Amino acid sequence: MTGANGQLGQDLLPQLLDRGHEAVGSGSAPFWRGAEEQPYVRMDLTDSAQTAAVLARLRPEAVIHCAAWTAVDAAEAPENRSRVWAINAEGTERLARACGELGCKLLYLSTDYVFDGQGTEPWRPDGQEPRPLNEYGRSKLAGERAVLALAEKSFVVRISGLFGPHGRNFVKTMLRLGRERESVRVVDDQIGRPTYIRDLARLLADLIESEAYGIYHASNEGPYLSWAAFAGEIFRRAGLPARVIPVSTAEYGLSAAVRPLNSRLDTGKLTEKGFAPLPPWQDALERFLKEWRESDGTD
Image 1 (cartoon, one colour):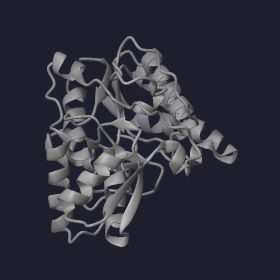
Image 2 (cartoon, one colour; image 1 turned 180 degrees about the horizontal axis):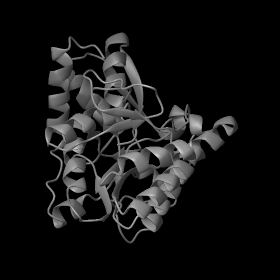
Image 3 (tube, helix red, strand yellow; image 1 turned 30 degrees about the vertical axis):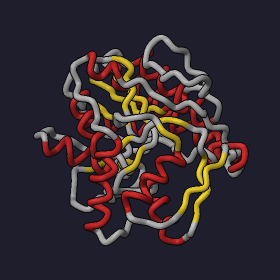
Image 4 (cartoon, one colour; image 1 turned 135 degrees about the vertical axis):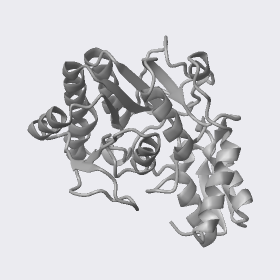
């Protein structure tokens, strides 16, 4: 698994090990950053020789590719673009080619940002042409295309609004701001559904154990909502008095990257293929907040 030190990787690697798989995490850092010792190997996807050597030595039956440049606004900076593409597009292509040659499965994590956000209908995984609006989305779409072209046994899983106990994410930011401020401005015209890492990790393990290859959309179930509405639910359920001030994306005006307004993902293909859908986001948020309270409300 690439990206083992990321917020998803730190939950997914233990999930795979708990299921009895011989799983090895990898990343560009020299060591595993998780709480408990786990199998880990250093592998920088921008280093072609290192990537080839690691895969040749491990000869995996399956690869889950979580590593990515995910700083959406920073990806717009001219000085960062070559690095963004080296990781998200070229690194993914290198990995896909190696998986194709080894004949192993490859699961690639993608994003709702491959779509242009027009309209109000949920985006289906098949039959709709992606049109990304920003550099991050374009680089991730290039990665998708490389995976589908070069790795015959491949899964592409597009996700949105990822949150969980590790790293930085919207829920943890709102919990911090809700304690520091009386009010918080949050955009009210970007619509989608959040995805809880604990639930996503279970789904990804289910997928990689199958042979139901293809493109999927994954988010927690429940009604679609705006970031402002989600922030309001976070404050209410966490017992924080902060008030949400809904603003349009244009009024918010702090983002370097253009973001899609419609990030509704149609997740129906999961059940069509026999996979259990993720629980409603309301349930996921409650479980996250319970863990947060038990950690004394600290990151």
